Length: 576
Image 1 (cartoon, one colour):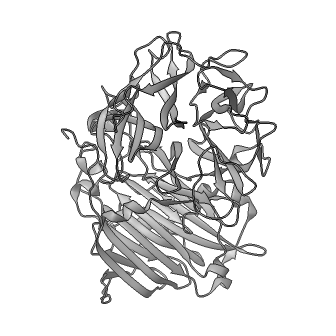
Image 2: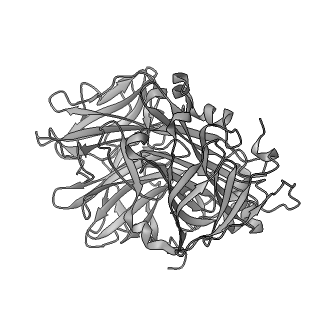
């Protein structure tokens, strides 16, 4: 069973994609050892259309909101270095979620209640259209406490200055709360009794917990008798989020909405997986608790927003376009030393619209519509078959900065390999064991991204289809193990099953965003998402390729493939 690194021939069909068709030529190639080395400090590893500051460290998105015609994104930021520390709230503003203007840091360590760091928090819009921020401060004793901040001047459309009243902190780690495991207040919601509610992430007696607080004036907060929710299935819940979604339709809802047509989402970021997990359920107004649809005390069985590199996410309700938008931090996969050499670490995922799937079992995510405004130089292909061992190059787009959408059709589902239910516990292991080089029945087929000319470096994003008892199971893999020749970077293989009825839908769709050192993939219309950070040397040397492939025994039909260059927007340019 050959590995992709040692395959002697992968028949390569090189297509120049255009609206008037495609020309093909067949060739056989072999792998060669790279003779070049390139610096990790190259600007080629900086993204073009993902949010990041000009330099230094960034992690969690904080307090995203839409206010008086302006989108605001705050974020955890070290203004002095490319490593974590000196944490303040960086701040940028936008009118379209794509182009961003940097503002001065909004909240800095300056008072006894946050002198050791201004950590993650959320924004809430109070009656009278008044924004307010709740955030975690690390106080003089390094306790985690919850504080409030208000805009200094509401007439300033950019909300550039914020004040922190001396009556902070509002919530302290007392009555059995661990002072080092008490942080990240979520957006508050207004109950029918006229009181505000907010939950804070914690770990109590080893159990992940969202501690609930109530207030009549947003200043004096009392801990509720019961937490919003707790589970023995995991430890500390970081960056919790709680919001309603419509049972039908894609329209977003204000955080305070609740009715019989609404489900609630409780999300938590887990250190065990460094991933964002969530539960679907209902909010019991009388008991002030979240009741999951499924009670499973094992985080491995909890749903995830994204099955790759995606953490500390935060949503907000975009009142302008009636949608809920999701932000998340994508950390680096290289080393601290690499970060210092580059002078920066951390980016944000592209903002995603999020809603409940029509099947009611999971959330769906899709990049915000505004991102499509960056598309340039489209290349298109229709009704093309990829036979066994077929590999064709997608030309006509910049392979390091692109948006690809492809629909795969499988003429014969009957030859799918049998499905083993034990695979549900650890899909990444299945992606490692049956990678893109291991021939199957239906699959692997998909994309080879940021690839060198000899495939010595590449990131494989691909599908496999298996036959279960009464349905077909679709596996999505994003394999970075051959993404870079750099020995120091983390190169995992990610994977998850996609909840689609391939027999009914007749196709498997994939959308992939490529932006230098990040690859975001959305399968099944956004039902399953996997994000990866990659650092191929070929990014610096410049000979970058993008391929579609099929290594299954059955021919795969590409019914539609569209690819575009992505323009570089105006993101936090210094000197604006």
